[in-house]
Image (cartoon, rainbow over all chains, first blue to last red; front, side):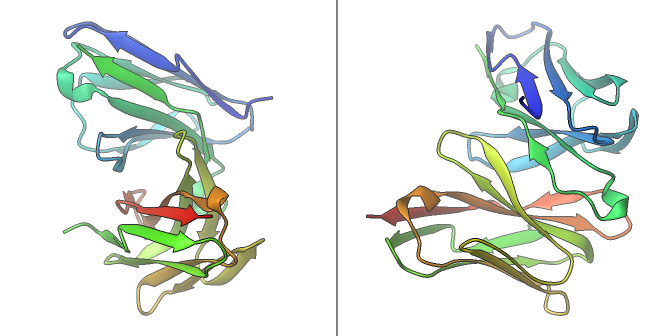
Length: 115
Length: 109
């Protein structure tokens, strides 16, 4: 069974479109994350949700909105896609970082290409 | 200036060599992570440290809190160790995670 899964694996779309990337974890973790890895392979955290509450919101455009229907899912919705949004997006999960149990488990990544 | 600096950026080694990758950080931290990103893109968490030293197989991670420095060592390196190794820290009292730019390791048979 896949611990952290993301769909789709690849996403090619036109500028201006709205798209969503889904993430699910079956580890029973309390915290989920979204990361963006740009063309230079630099990982940057975008969002973190702990028990469905946003606890990190880095300086990302408000075109990006995380949605967590329950603690096993953290979806990423992107409005009005731009060329610069092309990147690999990774979802991850961990137990509560405040409890020192924050080893993160990563999904396989979603490769987004905006044309 | 990045809160987390790694060195070297690129490293090529012969199979069997002892490898050291360094990570220095400038903020107070509650935890430090070492991640491995395979050539195919998948990311695996190797270690989470808040003090001392951890060992898993041929991998050893150490941290010196006073010097704000961590090292990742690989003993008896193997071509399958070829990957990008990423250091990340969680800032104390905040939920910010800062990442290094990674060290690309290539182990030649």
